[in-house]
Length: 123
Figure (cartoon, rainbow, N blue to C red):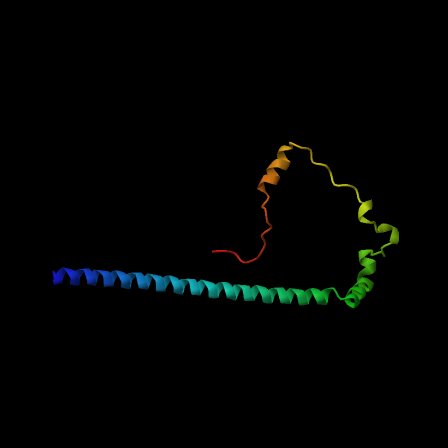
């Protein structure tokens, strides 16, 4: 009887050790994945900061004025006249999409409910 109890306890101990190892291994894998995602997020944020700095430099009014003066004749640039600017109510109306239009129904059915964006790809 004691021999059977010992065998059962050894089997239970081996099962518990196997289960503990599997949980530990899964946790380590999840931590590694989280670290990788955090690294990629940091890289994306740094890229965004760099692009914003580039945009701030490229869109400086003084720089644009210099470029316009330098290349104005080659590009045949002209100043915008006040009558060229229109108000939104002066724009033509959007075309009406008829009901039961097959293409519109297909496009509408494929549109996601929420817009999802991002540059980090899932594995």
